[in-house]
Length: 335
Ligand code: AHM
Ligand code: MG
Image 1 (cartoon, protein in one colour):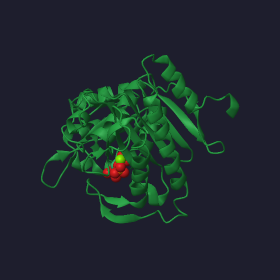
Image 2 (cartoon, protein in one colour):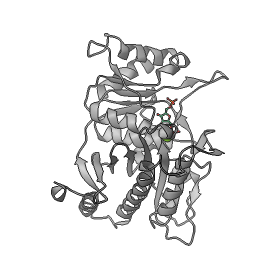
Image 3 (spheres, protein in one colour):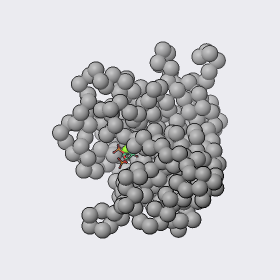
Image 4 (cartoon, helix red, strand yellow):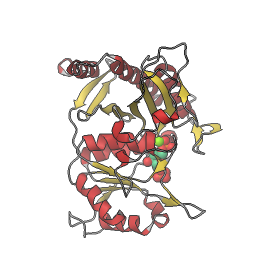
C-alpha cells in the first residue's frame, strides 16, 4: 500500500541525516534531478501523441542524428540543474563542450555529467529509454572557475550515480556509495516509491547481452568470450540466453536484476583502429559504480572501469559489466 511505502524524498533525507557533515546541497541536487526526470518521463510517455518523435536535423558531437526528444531532455536537464545551486559544471552527451553555470545562479562544488536520453535511437519504436547521471565533487575549493581538469576524474571518485528508466513504469535507480536503491514512480501521486531496496546483482547469471551483429568486428579475445557464453563450456554447462534491447539503460537494468553479462567490446573501424562505442564518463562509469555497489563488476577488458582516468569528455570505452562470476570469466579471455 502506497502509504506504507518509503518515498524517495524520505529516503534521501534519511541518508542526509546519517551524514553529519551534509549540508543538504547534495540532496537538493538529487531532488532537482528527480523533477527533471518526471518532466522528461511525462513527454516520453506521450511521445506518439506530441510532435516530439523523429530527428531535429542536427548532428551531435558523437556524429549521431539528434532526436527531438534527446534535445528536449537535454534542455530540461540544463534548465533545471543550473538552478539547483549545487553545481559548478555540467557535461552532456549532446554537447561537445562543458556547460558552465551562469554566474547569476548560485554555484556549488558538484559536477554533473549526463546522457539525457540514452537509447534514443529506440524512441520511434516505443522501446525503453533512460537518463543516466554521474555526480562528482571538485577536489579544489579555491573558488576559481571549474575547468575540464576538475571534471576528468576516475569513476571511483563519483559521489553519486544512477539512472531513470522510462519504461512500462518509470524507475529511478541510484547509489551514493551506500548500496543501490530502486524506486518506481507512482503516477497517481507523482512520487517515486522505494520498490527495490539494496539491490544486488546475482553472483552468477545465465543471460548474455551484446550486439552480436558486430561479432566479425570484434577482436579474437572478445569473440572467444562471446563463444564461451554461447557454448556449454561455461560455468552453467549450457548456452546462455541472449537478450539485447539496444538501450544500455534497459540492458543494464535487466542485468542488475537478473544477472549475466552485458558486453560492448571495441569494434574495428574502417581505418583498422579498435574503439568502444559507449562513453566512459556518461555511460560506462556511472553504471560501473552501480554494478560494483550491487556486488557486480565492470571492466574495459583490461582494467576496472572505475579506475580509468578520462583524458577527454567524450572518450569511449569497451564495456563488460554484470555478475561477478561472468565478468571474471570475460577477463580470462580479455586480459
Ligand atoms: P545513445 O542512445 O545515448 O547514443 O547510446 C548508445 C546506445 C546504447 O544505449 C546502447 O547500448 C548502444 O548504443 C547500442 O548500440 P548498437 O546499436 O551498436 O547495438
Ligand atoms: Mg547513451
